[in-house]
Length: 220
Image (cartoon, rainbow, N blue to C red; front, side):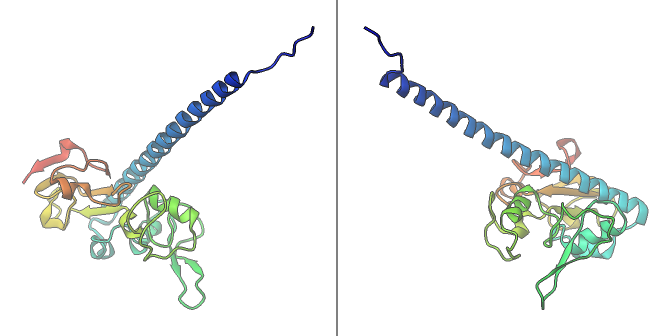
């Protein structure tokens, strides 16, 4: 009598269970990898912006008024355009025509049109959201893949206004109160939550991407 070879119900359920477990592990691992990639991207952007600020100060000998006037807002289009003109960042900013709604570039043609959008220079969480929802406006209350509004995900900066070699509370609002940070400029991304962790913890940002190190911090 011939017997037919095949899988039993128990074997099939076992295989399905193993596939389910492996799929869950892969989903979790992919999520961690994506999160790490965003943080790495944010740190790279922060470092590039900090370098550009220092190069600009060397060239100009002083901070342009536009940078000083927009310091509390971060890397808005007006600020980004300063770096575009001096070819210090490969970025493009846009303005929106009120009548037609069209986006008009503020930059020269040789610059890339991929890293900066019409709101200014955003961190990865803000950029990812724009890719998924290109029709969003600047007053959007929440963003995809992160928290807060678009202005919360602009790259932030503070300048050494009195040129004494430190950025401190006398040079404007800082994310870390009561401390002085050695340097001409500090630059940071607020991270996924869109908040300045330094203010909440009154010491050192926990999960923000920053351009300074503990060695550069001194108590006032």
